[in-house]
Image 1 (cartoon, helix red, strand yellow):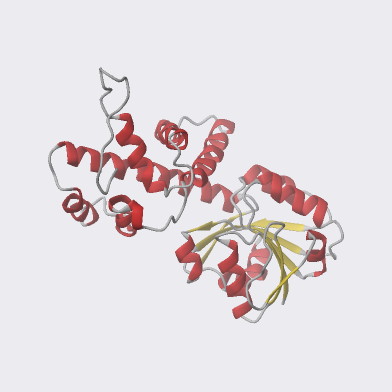
Image 2 (cartoon, one colour):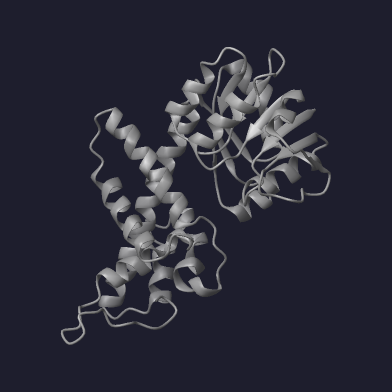
Length: 296
C-alpha cells in the first residue's frame, strides 16, 4: 500500500521503518528532517501525502495535526483515511473527523521509543468498525496490540486516561523511594522489593534504571511530553466536570520538574524534582544544599 507519514521524530522514525519493512511504500514528510530512513521517500510538502491511499500523522500537538490535515491534505481522493497517532486529545480529533473531504480516525500509542523500535507499542483506536478493520493491518506493522476503543476520539480518550495513571504512578514510585531513603533503606534494595510487591506493575520493573541510574539511562519519555498529555487529560476532566486530585498533584510536580530544568529528562526524574522540594533551606545562604549520588 502507498502510505503517507508525517512526523519523523523519536517515535515516528522507527514506525515508518516498520511500515517499509512490512512491504508498504512510504512517503514521509517532516520539515526539520533532512534524511529519511532507508526504504522511505522523503517529500518536500505535506500536500505530497495526498496522493497516498492512507496517511498517518505522528505530530506533537493538535495545532500541527490540524494544519497538516486542513492545509496539507485538501486534495485527497474520496475515501482517503488519515490516522492521527500523536496524542492531541479527543476534541481536536473529532473536529477533524467532522471535515467532509477526508476520513479521520485516531490511534495514539502507549510505549517508549525503545518499544517503538521493536514494534511492541500498543495502539488505542477510535474509529468505526469498518475503519478499524481497514487500518488494523497497517497499525499491526508498527504495534504489538491494537484495541478498538470505540468511535472516533475514543482512542485519544483512552490514551489520556492511561497517561494520567502513568503520571501518577511515576510520582508514586518517586515518593516511595524518598520514604524508603528517609527510613534508611538502600534505594536499590527497596526497588527490588517494590517490583516484587503487589504494587509491582510492569512500569515499575522496566523503569528501574531510570530511577536508580538516570545519568546512564536513555530517556524513554521526557517530562515535557507527559506534562503535555496530563494537561490534556485535565482539560478533558474539566469539560466533564470531573475532580481528579491525584492528576492535579502530579501535574504540579511535573511543572516543578520543568521549572527545575528537567523538561527533557526522563519522566522518572520527577524523583529529582521531589527530592529538591524536600531539601531543607540553608539558613545561611537561603538555598537548598546539593545532594550527590545516583539518585540526585
